[in-house]
Image (tube, rainbow, N blue to C red; front, side, top):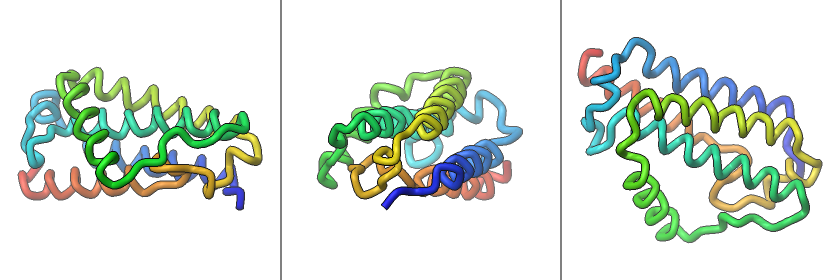
Length: 150
């Protein structure tokens, strides 16, 4: 069954806004500090950006009539997340924010251009069409701020 395009776009715009609100006012050194179970705020932003890049490519791929390239087992998902974290954890806060903004726009553009098939959530793998991944990370970031009185 196809998702509603406008609702998807609203979902991702609201999720993106909530993620940015969770880090509003945090300075660059705080964004770079690996104090969230070994991850920095910038690491969280780069992680979301990586998944938005994948999700955008999935929307384009599935819209073109092809199969998901991201059907993973739980172990593969964990391994991918670890590898992506290792590759991106050196990003400066400025780059992490750029990655987040750029990948977010790619995702919105892909959803805007998606075919009816591309809006069929049942065709997606791990990088699902509709996800609460942003909200999960925003929640962790809000708790981190509360715990650190930021």
